[in-house]
Image 1 (spheres, rainbow, N blue to C red):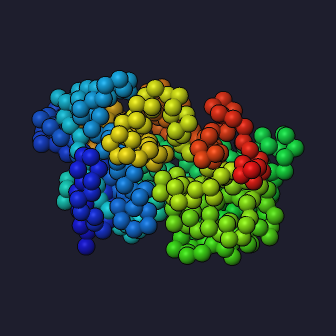
Image 2 (image 1 turned 60 degrees about the horizontal axis):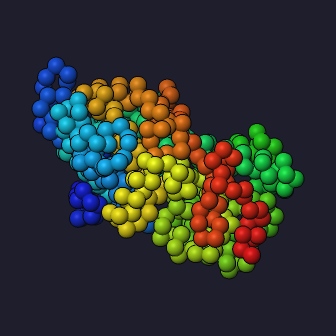
Image 3 (image 1 turned 120 degrees about the horizontal axis):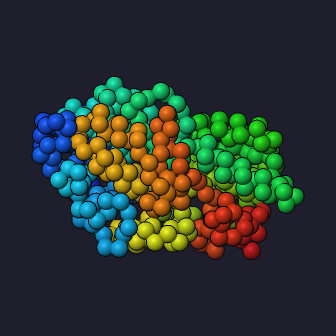
Length: 432
C-alpha cells in the first residue's frame, strides 16, 4: 500500500513512506489559452527517492538539494547569479512558487511504477523529477511514459535508461559511459608515462546499475586495448566482500573498478583492511563513494582511492555560483553539498527554466520546453558544458571528472584542464 511522505521546505521528512517521490507541477486552474498558465499559484515538484532502507542517506541528501533549489527559486539568494535564482517564483507564471512533494521508494524497483501512478492520479502532479537507483528509475520512467508525464532524472546513470525510446523521460546527469570514459582517459595518461594500467578487475553489484556499468567497462576496455582480468559480481545485500576481493587480488590487476552503494562500499573498504590489500588503483563508480557517512566511517581506508563524479567540491570552490550554493547548503543542513545534492539542485534549476519557457503547467508544453532547453555551463554550478538534450533526451553537455582522496581531501586529478594535481599512483604511495 502506498503511503505518501511529506517533508518541510527545510528537508525534514515528517513521515517516511513505502514508495517513490516525484516532482510534480500543479495549478489552481488549467483553463486559458496557454493550456495551463492561467491562475497558477503553486508548482508542485515531486522527488522519487529512497527515504528509508539502505540508501536512505543518499535519498535525504538528494531531497535536500531539491528543497534548497525550490527555496532559492521562491525566495532568492543574494549574490547568486543563476537564471531565475532571484526572480522569486516563475516570472512567466505570475511568480508561482515551487513546492517539493517527496515519496519513499525504499530503493526497490517494484515501487517505482506504483509511486508514479499514485502521484499522477491521486496527487495530480504534472512533472516528475528525481529518482536515484537506476532500477527504480526504469520502472518509474516506464509508468510516466504510459501516463504521458514529463520525468527528469539526474542521478541514475545506467545508459539503458535513455535507450528505451521514451518520449517523456529526460536525464540531465552523465551516463556510465561518460563516467567510464573519464577513467579510461586517466588510464591512457598513465600508460603514456609507462605506468602499468592495462589490467582491469571489475567488482560490482549484480543489479541494474552494477551490471550496466560493468557492460560499459567491458566494451570500453575492448576498444581501448585493456584487459579484463577479473569479473566479480556480488549481491547488493551482501554482508562481506572478502572472498570477492580475494578473487580480484589473485588476478593481479593494475586497477579495480568498484560499483557500489554505501553499504557495500563499506564492505569493500573493510575487505581491503582485512586482507591488507591496496590495489595499485581503485576507480569507484556509484553513490557509495560520495555518501558523507561512508566517507567519515571509511577514514584513512579511502586514502589513494579515486572516484568519478559529476560535481566536485574542489571545482566548486573555483566557481562563484557553486561556492555560494555549497555554503548555503552547509549552513542549512550542517553537511557538505555532494554530487547527488548538486545534481538534483541543477535539475531543479533546469526544470524551472523549462516551466518558465513553457509559460504553462501543461505536461505537453513542459515536455516541449525541456526538449528545446539549451543552458550554457556558466549558468549552472556543475563542471559541465551545459544542459541540452539529444534525440534520446540525454544531456549532451554533462561531464565527469576523476577525484582522488589525498590527505583526507578529494582532489581533481583528471581531466588535465581542471586537475588540481596529478594522480598519485600506486594508491599505496598516498598512504606514506
